[in-house]
Amino acid sequence: MKSKLFTAVFILFASTLLLVATSGFKPSQGKPWPVPDKNAKMANPVKSTAESIKAGKELWVKHCQSCHGKAGKGDGTKAASLKTEPGNFATPAFQKQSDGTLFFKISEGREDMPSFKKKIPDTEEIWDLVVFVRTLK
Amino acid sequence: MTKFKKYLQFMMLPASICLFLLLSIGTMAQDSTAAVPVKKPVKGTFESNWVLDNQSVMVPIKGTLEMDMQHRFGTVRNGFKDFYGIYAPANIRLAFSYVPMDKLQFGFGFTKERLQLDLNAKYAILKQTKGGIPVSITYFVNTVIETTPDKDNQIYVTNGDRMSYFHQLIIASKITDRISLQVAPSISHYNNVEGVLDANGVIQRNMKNDHVAIAFMGRYKVSEKMNVLINYDQPITQHPGLKKNTNPNPNLSFGVEFVTSAHAFQLILGNYQGITPQSNNYFNHNAPFKYTTADGTEMKGGMFLIGFNITRLWNL
Image (cartoon, rainbow over all chains, first blue to last red; front, side, top):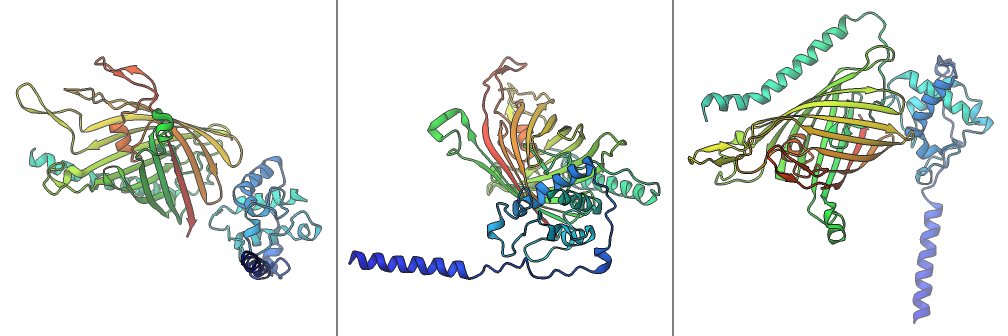
């Protein structure tokens, strides 16, 4: 009787694990994120200096690190609960995106990635963030 | 009580609002005529609306909705008996605020102690700029209505007796990237104060209706996410205290703050249990250190308690 009960509980537990593992997790990192040309071509008005990197890092730690991780590798504390995989910012594929593209994506957001244009209303600060993201390679 | 005095009491709220609006309009008018390039304001002097027991100089950006959850446990003096006050009766405040336009915030909150409903407003009069204005100045005002049931008017003779008001001018400066300092003089007003019978059987006020105080605060930024905070409140008004010492005690509080994109968490060790500022300034009987008052009363020190502030922000 005990072994039957154990088997039933084991099957139930294993089925639940299988269900959780196969459903709901749909990483959309590969999904195209179109950025309008005029935005993608925008040049960063903020030069990369110790001051702008520091300002960008402060914003990164406060707003981005919990999902994207300390070094932008997508391993932040919240990353595991995201439907959208945060990606690895250290890769050449990520870093080849233009500054304007990064600015657009930070400002507008998509799916799990929130829009920051209200939270960071000063555009210069978003450019600071782009400057910092460039240091993650 | 004369009719005139009652009238004055009821006029405190509208007068506060008028003063507040006048300040707002004055500053807006200055903004509209400014054509010269404006120096950028200094950001992050404090990173939450709260510095432990007081308001900070910060007014969040336009469109910010904030929810505050504040808790103050009992004093730690009983040790394991009530686990340093955590199992003792606690005071709680749940509050909301919104920033409908730049520099201006409105809010309301509910506090367990004396069932207080508070309505408050905060306006950033002046902002510190890089290489320009050395300080930021913000005005904070609130009105509290005590909603304790009192069917037979045993506590409150009139509804005006339920009201109290608090005005504070908050002056702060970000000295370095890591260090910010703030000083905040305030005045609290209670319509209803404790009375005692004197030798002739005449009721006398045991406390004055108005109480002036000053608060000093500091922040040291340990990392991008963590700050250490300190706060000291010094009462200034001396109250008559006809039958006992009624002067409120100073407050000393320390805390750590953890800041994220949408939250601020502050863990506090301090003397204030009231949460609403006028209640803290007017009724604090927990003393940070042992001392003797002007009338010779020995005050016991070390009456600290644990508390926390949690704020949650949404950008609408």
